Every structure is written in C-alpha cells, then in structure tokens.
Amino acid sequence: ALLTPFTALFVHGSWLHLLGNLLFLYVFGAMAEERMGRAHFALFYVGCGYLALVCYAAVHADSEQTLVGASGAISAVLGAFLYLFPRARVTSLFPFLFFLPLRFPAWIVLVFWFGLQWAAAQAADAGPGVAYLAHVAGFAAGFLYAWGRYRGRSRV
Image (tube, rainbow, N blue to C red; front, side, top):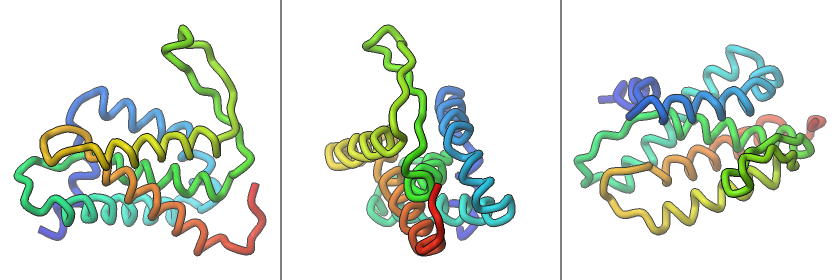
C-alpha cells in the first residue's frame, strides 16, 4: 500500500494525459533540474508527487476511483519554478487567439494556472475526472519546498 502512490506517478489515464504532463515537464522541469541537480530533482519530484497523491487520497478517502498520473509531481515542479525563476518568460499558445504564440512572465502564467486549478478543485465533485486537488497540493508543496531550501540564495 505504501508503494501505490509511487507507482501511480508512472501510470497515466490516456496518451493526452501523458503528453500534457511531458510538455509541462519539458518547459519547466529542465531549468528546475539544472538548478537543483539531477539526484536532488529526482527525489524532489517523487517526494512531492507522492505527497500530492496522498493529500488527494486523504481528502477523498471514500472514493473508489483509481488515482493515477504524475500531475501532482509536475505541479510541484511548476511551484518550484515559480520560486526559483520568478523573472523567467515562457511562450504560451492560446487556442482562442488562433494559437498565436505569446511570451509572458512565467509568474503570470503560473499564478493564473494555479488559480484555475484552485477554482476547479473547489467545484469538482468526487466523481471521475481530473484530480485538481492533487495539482493544488503539488504546486504548494513544490513552492514551499523551494522557498525553504533556496531561501536567501540568489534567484534567477
């Protein structure tokens, strides 16, 4: 039972779920991994992903739905990135603007994303779907970890 959250980090509900997580990991994970170091990043990733899944499972303890995916761990990477690289810029594609690529400060994109996850977690029922609460818990864990570990050091 203790290994279930760990193994859930490597199983995804669909190809779209896997590709979405890989895209976020590619955009935000490389710089965070470079800053933390490979081994440290791997432990951070697994630890925060485990924590995010356990938080979601604790709140929805009566649910019989299968909980899979690395979204909580990916969200932790986003939270750490926000703390470590507050002035970084990212390119985003917006479908409602005909997929026009626009560059924004990462903090705007990440705070907006977190707000969407928070709102969705408040509105979500216990039925099948996206574990928004795992996203919120992972993001918060990643940000707080980076704040605690790298506080007082120069941020990029």
